[in-house]
Image (cartoon, rainbow, N blue to C red; front, side):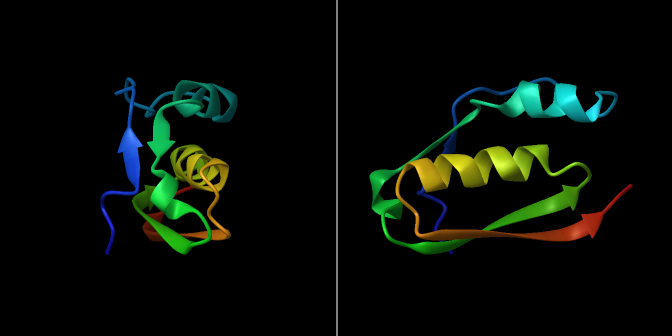
Length: 79
């Protein structure tokens, strides 16, 4: 487990009552990834996946830092 590769730059408001589009916009630039991610195959682990906006934003930051592959695993899913 590597907790040093991803940092939350912006602590956003709750996603609870936001639309899918608003959720994505809310976390669009909330994360930054360390250059150590370059070339790595990584998993982002989320507690609850609803629209995937937060996990996608985290994965995008890791890919922008050079990660070769990023997967997402969630403990629970809601619709």
